[in-house]
Amino acid sequence: MNPETQQQIKEMITQNKIMVFMKGNRLMPQCGFSNQVVQILNILGVPYETSDVLADQEIRQGIKEYSSWPTIPQVYINGEFIGGSDVMTELYKNGELQQKVEVALAS
Image (cartoon, rainbow, N blue to C red; front, side, top):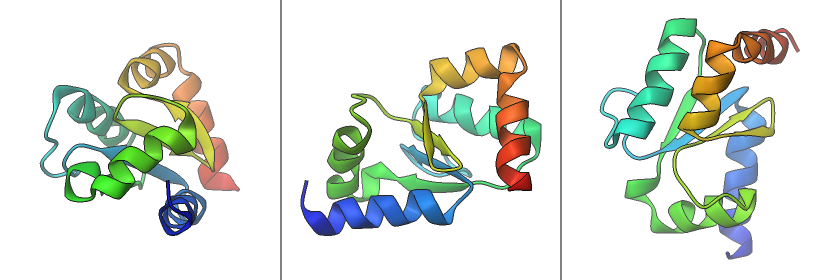
């Protein structure tokens, strides 16, 4: 990954309390896993930003290297890599996601 892409990813993660790297965007997710993450965050009613990795190959490949995680979507809360749709679903079901989101938004 080139330094510019790394810096761009870092800025998106640090400037947004909740950042989702996904296929598509919050209004039109382009895969089921991305849609699942969007639905969970919408249910929680929290503000979040998205980056469409389909629109930028550098970001699409770069985010995988940045997080050492091979799949999309990828969710960051308060600068911390949380995981993909499976992790988000599990955290949502056991109540941990609500806690992480509340802490992030309060800070």
